[in-house]
Image (cartoon, rainbow, N blue to C red; front, top):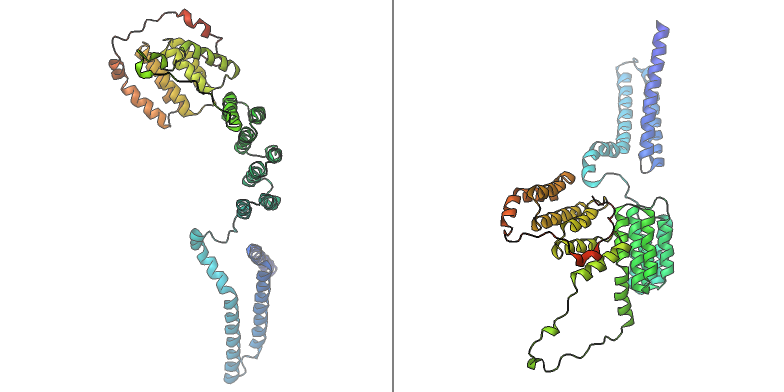
Length: 414
């Protein structure tokens, strides 16, 4: 039994020493100055062990009489008090911080080190002072520590393109970032979009801009970013014409105006001649053959079919392709469904058909505000039909003049 008690005592002592050692290790590891904390722990252990040994040795002198016992006890008490004062000086700040820090951390963030991030204020100051080369050098110093920081990459590319007229260098800078396997998709798309803008604005090079936007389509096929890139490509020729005209500063020829306008019998011939809807629609069809994802032009074509040719079927076909494209935003899809409902009301569709169109908004986006707006319109749908002029019945016929506008069934149409 005595041996068992000794063994249990040794095991308990080892457990206590192990826990104490773990606590001390964590204290040293988490402290801002581990060496100082380790010294404090060792000094504390030395003080406690030394005081305990000295007091233990003095207890052997007790029992020698009242005066001797009193003197020894006073010395022992003085040693204990001195040790307590020394330990309190060393550990009171630490213990108070340990107790109060959970509350103060709520307000000041505690002892968490600040997030390491690059600073570009010096580079921007140098750029503003007309020293772009020095600004680029400063940015490079920051990127050595943070090689994939998008803000720094874009700032350096902007200085290269806009201040140093080094568009090739800016393109290399962006390509180096965009080819990084872990580059975020949105940042890659933003980088190539900015590169396309620089090719257009700085060198009026639509082909290079198109190549930059094609990179977005190649990297992220079937996404909203790719769809936006395709739409920008569809309008590059128009943007190029505007930019070239601005760069060339060509003189604009103005034909001589009508003379003696006040003496003319009629001024009808002076009014600008509007293009026939058929011509506009044919141009849109041709454009969509090359750029099928141009949502702006496809919506315009649907409006011409509905408003000018009264062809609900052809308008529905165009809008269906927009509505069924999964990459479009909910707000856009809801807009096209509402537009289709407008055409259905105007061109004589029954109420169930219009209701089914509007219910698709609620079914597809039940938690978004567009669903609430669709619900309100559904509640007013009967009044909407009643307010439609009874004399505006549409005669649904076949218009031979628009036969040239018809083309193959678009992808995704129902």
